[in-house]
Image (cartoon, rainbow, N blue to C red):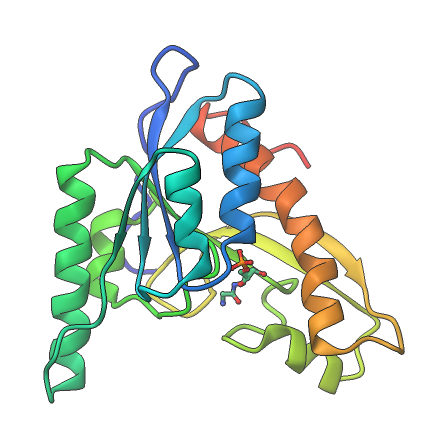
Length: 212
Ligand code: GAR
């Protein structure tokens, strides 16, 4: 529902789509994408890394791969709504300045406002650590464990105005073992995410139907 999804232009190896990756923490998913993009010619290239947290470990990968990297902290304001809007406006300006054509949220732990989503809808992809629509939100692995689930997974989806409700591009299952802690499960899911989502981007950017 809401605004339509507008696909980015078709990327090609000679003219790859310019991607920004938004992170909040460790950035293992960002690293997987950068390794993928450096392992062979791809229809997309990471041109900008943005974190909402200046201490995010993942920011180091910008230096390692010589990619522009910016930490944009939440601005000071007593008004929580205003703070989010100001923050997103700064992010949007940076994306435009860098001619970004597609945004990937990988471990970006903020919910974007519908106003921001509308500007990028169809060009905004999220990686989520569950088989949506099960376990949306910030604690998907904990919720799956507490639910006694034996299977969970990861989802690559387009972002819409809701929370983890956008169009699903691909999913991959991950087993849950009785001995799993949240951390063990997080890492097992990440392994699958790192294999799945770069390939989904290959297809999405090339306007091909998604292979899994
Ligand atoms: C990934 O598992 C991603 O699916 C999850 O954060 C992790 C990021 O790890 N995203 C969410 O939970 C979004 N709600 P990383 O910082 O090591 O790439």
